Image (cartoon, rainbow, N blue to C red):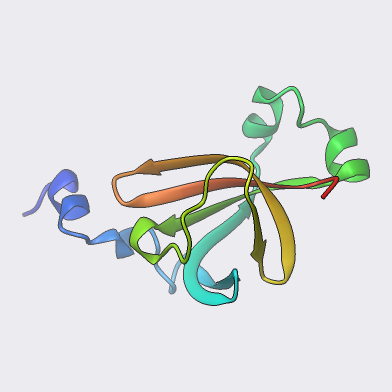
Length: 110
């Protein structure tokens, strides 16, 4: 039986980006990719002082996008603006770990 690390290194990332479980098709900068698109958890909201209920309801919102790094249609860095499913987002954070890129995206004063 393979270890978790071996599965991840073997490009078996469908464990996480699985269309039958959590992910779905999303259009990123005009290209369709399979990704997990979610809002922030309560813990994530509380850990970032900028993420207050006032920010989410009055000024914008923050979402998380998990995508296979190899499926990223463009190279994204902090501060870029990207379009996801027809909506423009500012990239607040980019983390790549074991073949998965996690983007923290904000909609506010674009």
